Image (cartoon, rainbow, N blue to C red; front, side):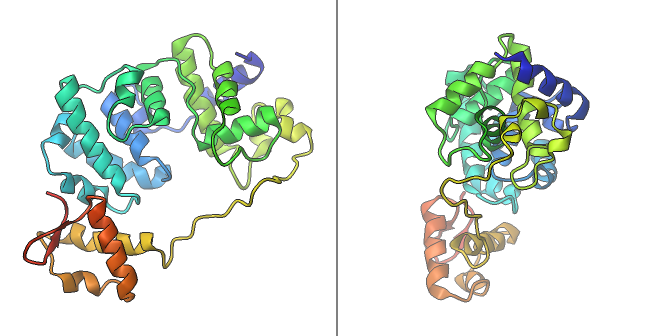
Length: 290
């Protein structure tokens, strides 16, 4: 652990952390787990209202597990990547059946939940239970790439070297390690951003290898931003919106009118059915999963 990096970032976080409900003293492990799933590839400003509504309706895993998975998809709204709603529902059922309705504190038990990967398991163990884990999301990877490795962006795929570097920086004291995990993540979200880093506000600017080397430009494989307009993903979102807004099953023409390209529309609908997000009924209508 290198206090040259950790101490200034921890001090910065103490003074600059955003006041988010899943970080509050009374936040439950379930609330932390829900936030982590919702925040994947989705900004905080979009997640906040959905998270609050979700936690009011389903304050425990057991409450969510008692309802059809289609209700989770409906409540997911327009957060995007709605399969995350299904994974949360599956996790809620597993938590109810395997752990008596309590989110497990063990990293191994968290990792064994449906749809929970290594990042989410480490994040929940750290943020909800104050354990010592290296938590590597996109923001953290970018901060460490610049601060220690002197590169503008990390590799596209996570490497063993990145994991070893992150683990080497984690403070030994578990509660301090948990604060470090969220502090470096917050630094990446607010200061060491992808496109326009606010280096003047960085608490470790004097130690930043990328800055000290003259901020060399990224020279790896092209970094292409994700497109949305006209994609199958947009088409899927339009089709799901019809089903979310309906009181019950819908006729096929109600889906046909929201996307003009029939071939793409049918492909998107087939994918939604294959993913378990839409149920086709015997009478030719469609509904959210029941």
